[in-house]
Image 1 (cartoon, rainbow, N blue to C red):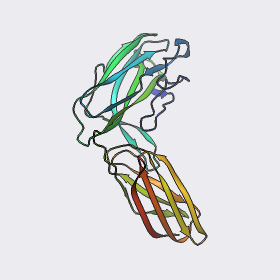
Image 2: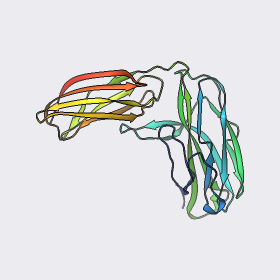
Image 3: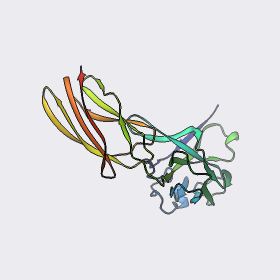
Length: 255
């Protein structure tokens, strides 16, 4: 039975970029030396406004000792309630085109790939990943564990008319821990910051929310504290771009 394994490190935080797999090459920096092995990607953050046309170009380099079949695919981001993001490998990012989606790279070879926006996104913005996968060209003939490479870059299409909007859901509380679900109903990934005050039988605790990025349409849980009990009052103020976007003041029970 053949099995495939993609190895390496991906640096990404809603568009922070990517790094050469299995290497210590810096994101967006020079391609790693061939002796270091693996697949590298330069130009890993493609940032542009929401005007159709070219977004930029990335360079894919094969630093492994064997020829690689490379695929380049724009992907949607997924985001967990904890805030972690990853490419959705089941879904292609609509509206993004690449000049070369599949090609073969000899050892030491490089390929430039152009990326473009086909049309203005309906929501005004678009945030996704550029997934690059490299597998040995003779992968179908190999047996056992086969080493592959995967690098992830970022696509950030910023809105021409930014809309800031956050909506709070019902607090989630269990076993002394509470969190406030916050949904981004705007069209930017501007960092969410703020302050919160939580009061229970033990008194009042003041906490801060720092540099949390939430994808448009996604919901992330903002921690309200631990070791809480009984009737709790939470006062939350969240900001984007220095502006207050959400004010929340509710009471709830923690068991």
